[in-house]
Structures are given as C-alpha cells and as structure tokens.
Length: 158
Image 1 (cartoon, one colour):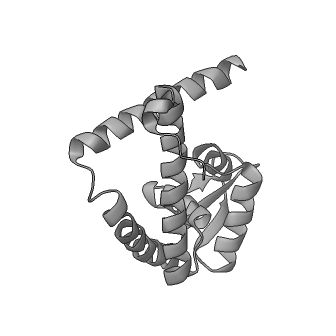
Image 2 (cartoon, rainbow, N blue to C red; image 1 turned 135 degrees about the horizontal axis):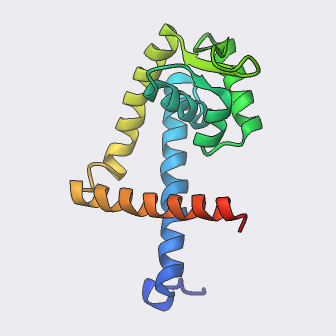
C-alpha cells in the first residue's frame, strides 16, 4: 500500500494551500449538514442571510453578488428560495429605480438567529474551541491579505 506524503515532503506553500482547501471543505460540510438537519437551510442560504443580518439596511442584490462566495445567478436563486419561505423580502431601491434591495423579514431574523446558534455549535469542537484569540487574529489577517490581493488583481484584470 502506498504511503501518504508527509508535511515535510511537501513544499510549505503547497501544504499551506492544501490546508486552506481542506479546512474550508471540512468546516463548510460540517456546517452545511448541521444547518440542513436542524433548519432545512443549506449553507449557501445561510451565507446570504449572514450578510443581510450584518447590514442595518436593505442590501442591493448586486452587492450581495459581490459580497458572498456565490455567483450572481446563485445569489438570485438563493434569494428566490429564501423569499418563497418568507425569510427575505425584495423591495425596489429608493436610490436606483433599476435596482432591487433585499432584507431579512422578522421571520428571517428569527430563523437566522437559530441557524447562527447551530452554526456556532457545529464549529465549536473543530474550530473555535481549538483556537485562541491570537490564532483567530492571524487567520483573519491571512484572509484579509489574500482578499486584498485578489481585489487588486481584479482591478488590473490579471
């Protein structure tokens, strides 16, 4: 039986990249399973609700497309599904007649709060309980650095 590669046999950049992919996949899958089981709410729906819950005002649909990890068409389908369940409402934008804004309904805020508690409970034993404040700060700094570099590349068309 072939042996597995060890960390020392892999270049540091490759191991770090694999670690990010592995962690993202494992944590997302864990949260998705918990949210679907407890709330019939896929993680992609939760992500949209998270952005909406974080905003004090309705959010233009185009901003959701730029903020989430979902494509604009995926965001549109998720908003359709959330609206069908009564969790979000679409309203014409007061600032731009061509735009639609999205906000959580009261029912949506309640479901989000319950789902957020489920998400936190699912992550605790494999993420937040294992990391201290410094670990979380370092991860946040890495994420901001990678996101800023992507933004700069997007602006230059590279």
